[in-house]
Length: 475
Image 1 (cartoon, one colour):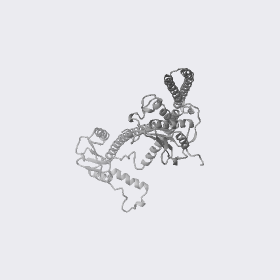
Image 2 (tube, helix red, strand yellow):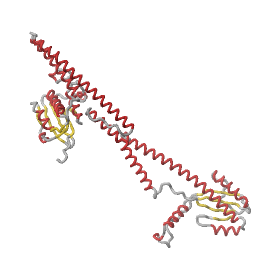
Image 3 (cartoon, helix red, strand yellow):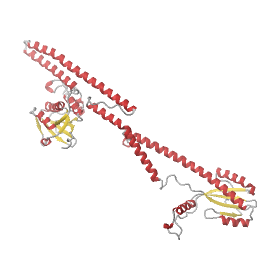
Image 4 (cartoon, helix red, strand yellow):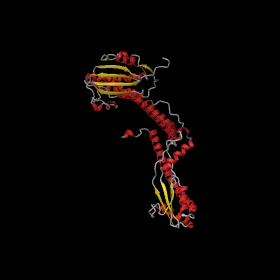
C-alpha cells in the first residue's frame, strides 16, 4: 500500500498541488454550471412571459376563427401555436414553485387583455431531428454557418420544452410550446485539447519549478553523505533561499564541530600513546632485574598486551583523520603485495584476469583495510582464498576461509568496536575486535562496503566492494 504513495518531498508537493488544482477546478466548474443553469432557467421563464404577452396582444381582440388562422401562420416545427376550446395542459396545479410564481406574473401582465387563467408545464425533450443537410444539398456545399444552424436545430429539437395554455375572456385557450435553449457543455471535444494542453503545461512548469526549488536540498543531501565519508570535504556554499542558507550554515557548523571533535580525539590518543610509552619502558627495565624467569616472562607478556591495546586504540582513534591525498591505485597490485606476506593465502582461479583494476583512495588506508580483512581470515580460518573481479562500476574482493564462521545473528555485531565472537582479549586468539571496524570505516570512506556471509560448507566469506575509477579522458 505504501508504494501507492510518493516517497519523496517533491513528489508529495506535486501530488498535493495537482490534487488542490483538481479540487479547485471541479468546485469552480460546479458553481459555474449551477450559475449557468439558474441564469438560463430565469432567462427561459422571461422569454415565455414575453412570448405569451406578444401572442395574447396579437390575438385577444380577434375572433376565434381569426385566432386559429393566426396560430397556424405563427407555428413552426419547434415553436408550436394552437387555439382550442380546451387547454393543452389539463392540470391546473403547477408542477413546481417557479412555474407557479411565473403563472401569477403572466396573469398579472395579461389581465388588461382579458386573460383569466394561465397554465405552464415543463415537458421533456421531443423527437430527434437529423443533423444532416437537406437531400438536395451536398455536405460539401454546406458552409460553416449553415452547419452550426443544423447542429443548433438538432440540439433545440432534443431539448426540454415549456408548454403554456392561456385562457381568453371568451373561454378559448391559446396553447404554445417553446423549446428551451440548449446550454453547451463547459468541456467539449473542441476545447478538450486546449484544456488538456493547459493542464499539461501547468504540470510541466510545476515539475520544473519543484526541481529548481529542491535542487539545493539535493545538494545538501549529497553533502551530508560526503561528510559521513570524509570530514575534510569542502563546506557547502551558503547562497540561495533563506531556508537553504540556514540549513547549509547548520551543516557547515556541524561539520566544523565534528572535525574539531575528531581532531581532539586524535590528539588525546597520541598523547595517551606517548605518555604510556615511558612508564611501560621503565616497567620493562625493572622486570629485567627479576631473577624469577617465570614471573618475568608472565609480566612481560602482560606488558605486551597493554602495548598492543594502546596501539589498537590509537590506530582506531586516528585512522579517519590522517592527512593522505587520494590517488589512483592499482588494486590488483595492492592485494597481491598483501597476499605475499601470508603463506596461508592463495588466489582463486581466474583472479589473475582482474589485473589492471583501478580505484581511487588513500593508499595507506586502503592497504590497511585489505590487510585487516586478510589477517582476520587467516587468524580465524588458518587458510584463506582470495578472488578478485571487476565490474562496470565497482571492484569486488572476496576472501573465503575455512574457519568456524560467525552465528547469523552476530554478522553485523562484529563490526562494532571491541566486539569479538571468541569473547576474550587474548592476542593469540584474534586481537582486540577493531580490525573489521576499521576496515569497514575505510571502505565506506571511499564509497564502498564490507559484508560478511557464512559459507554453506563451513567458513566465512568476507566481501569488499569499492567503486571502480573511471577511465581517464582520451584513453
